[in-house]
Image (cartoon, rainbow, N blue to C red; front, side):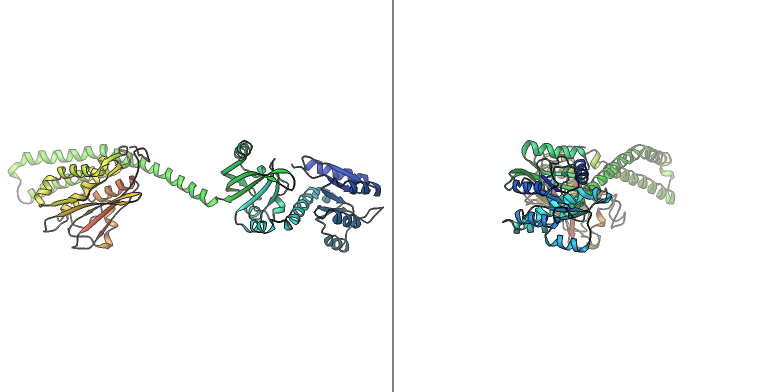
Length: 498
C-alpha cells in the first residue's frame, strides 16, 4: 500500500471512472482523484494545475484523447501520463510513444487489474525523465552503474527510486518493479524491519544493519543496509536514502564458521571423553600389567636367564613405554580442556624453571644454553613451560656426538612475538618438517632416540591454543631452529579459560 500524487482522471464514461477509482483505492493508501467527464471540467482542471498524474481515455466524445495528452505534455512536461482506453491498434500506440506516454492499459477485466502496476511504472518513468535533465544527472548515471544497491524512499518507506543493482539483487527485471512499494515489505524478518524503522525515527540514520530480504522467487538474501534521512529540495519533503550491499557470501562463511566451531566443540568434548577413557579404562589394566611384571621379576630373581631374561626385560620396557605414551596422549588431549587462564608471564623466568628441571640432562650432555632478552607475554604459564621444555629437551637429545649448543631468541614483530629455539643437532630433512608435528610420527628408531613421538604434536597444540603458529627450519647435519609466535595481548584481551 502506498500514496499517489493527485490524479486527473479524464473519461466521459462515469462508470469507467468509478471503477478505475475503486481499483486504485484498493491498492494504494491515499488516492486523490479529480474526475473529468466534459471539456469544461477539463479546462478548469488544466487551469488549476492541481494534479501530478494524468489517466485519460483516448476516444472521448468531445475530444481526441491524444490532444488531451499533447496539451498536458506541453504544459507539464514531467507529468506521468497513462492511456486507459478501449481503443487499440498500432497507430494509436505509435502516436502515444511520440508523445512520451508512460503507460497504456486496455479497458478489460485484465486491464483494470493491471492498472496499479502500470501506474507504478508510469510514475517511475516520469521521475527518471525528470532526473535525466537535472543538474545532478551525471552523478545519477554513476549511481545507475554502481554494483551495490541504491534505494530512495519516502519518510514512510515507500520506494521512489532504485538502481538496477538493487533490482537484480532481489531477482527483479527492472527497478520499475520496486517503485511505490514499501521498502520494509522486502524484509524477511519483521523484527529487523522494526529495528530499521526505529533507528530511522530515533536518529535519522540506520548504519550497517544486517538483514535478510525477500527475493522475487521467495528465497532470501543477506544484505547490509545503511540508511539516512535527507531533504528533497524539489518536493520539500524528507526522503530516506539507503545503500544495500549483498553479504550472502559473508554470511555463508559465517554459517560455515559457526558450523565448524560447533564441530570443534563436539570434537573437544569427544577428546575430553577420550582422555577420561585413557586415564581410567586404559591406565588401570596397564598398571596391573606393570605390577605383575615387577612381581614376576622379583619372584624369579636370578632364576631367569638367557632368552627368558631378555623377554622379561622387553615386556617391562614395553609396559613403561606404553605408560609414557598413554600419559603423553592424555596431556595432548587436555591442552585445550585443562589449560589455565592467560596471564602475563616472564618468558625468561619460565626458561629458568625449564633449565632447573632439565639440569641433569644438560649436565650429562655438556649442553650450553643461551638466550636473548626475553619478553613478558600473556599466556598460560604452565603450557609455555611445557612448550619450552619439549623444544629444549629435543635440542639436547637430537645432537649426535657434539656438545649441544641451544639458543633461545625473541623478535618483536609488531602485533606478536616470534620466539625461537636454535640447536646444532642432527637436523631434519626439509621434506619431513610438517610430519614431525603429527602424533606418533617419528623420524628415528626407538632404540636410536627414545621417546613417545608426541612431544612436538603437543607443542603445536599449545601454540595454536595461544593463537600462534609453529614451524621449523632445518637441514640435515646443520642443526634446527624451531619458531613459534605468540600474539601480543593485554591482560584482559582474548583470555582463554581451561
